[in-house]
Length: 193
Image (cartoon, rainbow, N blue to C red; front, side, top):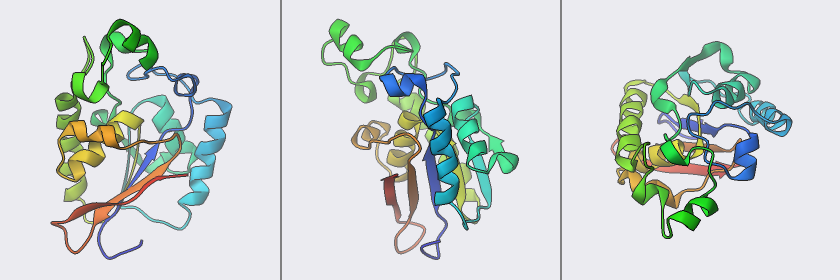
């Protein structure tokens, strides 16, 4: 690890057909593409030699299969609170299509009809953060883009809407940690490929 404090490694799942096409994929449980599977195997090389007190995964097959292909499935615990944003009526719809019907719409500001608002996702992120901070050691987390962006915002003490300022590519690794002591949460690395 890069310092004496615990670090939280965040891994976004590998590519799916919907992530490649730009469709909002919340609770629809779709598999990784062959490219996504290869990228998930590549995560193993990037995490080689690291040890973690805990490994947590979203229950979605795209996150858990990324975890498994990266070599951590046997020790992973599935956490429902790590699920992606519930997009409600916008599930499977591209942002461009939403904007055609609802000009000016922004996910982090406006949420989704029949789905979650940023505050809902933020409440789940806060539950995860409380669990992470209770573990004395580094943790590896597998989940999806928008949830992890809200998690990063809440880690820093920003409102959930602050997640709009972070972008995550598929199969990327980010690291949350601390600077001088455990009262100074920071982002140590972001969106590493």
